[in-house]
Length: 306
Image (cartoon, rainbow, N blue to C red; front, top):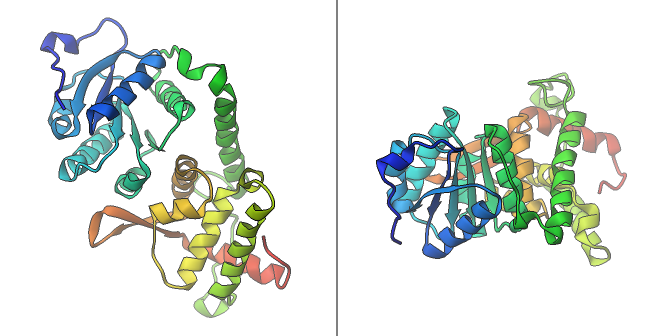
């Protein structure tokens, strides 16, 4: 893919800084450019992933970085992820990564970066919402055009409700900043209520059976589904990569990632780097979350947990 060069003079702007577009192919670049322009932003340089790591070091002013991926670029992508993560942590810009589902695990290392959004197979409304969030965080003027037309109004409303639901759920789980779970007296190893993987597995199976009779949307509860999946894996001594956990959530991957990222930030889930693969991250329950779930199952006893 040919990069479109930008003269040094173009690095200084009287109007709001542009969005820098980085993509893995010409098709991906065109898709990203359409989304950014439709949302009312000015597009800056357009670059292939292979040239991006060096170029973003030279960018003086940028409103944000949009990375569109339709294929794995290997080491150049890993290098780019590292640089963008560092820049975002320094407050230089916000970033959005839009990718196909097979690239979910390589992007999972970005889950602990609050100013980086990850979209998986996003629709137009997902893209518009991501740009709106990025603009709000960076105090950038946003002028939304056709991407938020009447055809997408319902989807945007659903996204707004989804974010509100995440916030309200976490508020119920929280007892204050830094204390994501209700206060529990620590248990010794011998005091942990016994629980079998089969018991948890039967609950998960019962939840899945509902989709035979009703639409999945009626029962979407990704936080609970992920908690159950991680509990089952913990008991069975299995490790759960991000991609598998997103499947267990039974919602679109972008939605699952929003929940997962927030649960990590609240200390309910813990990320563990794969020691054998630097591009993969495992997720597990925090000890307090594990205890809370085991106590819950012990308290409900033989009552059906769904």
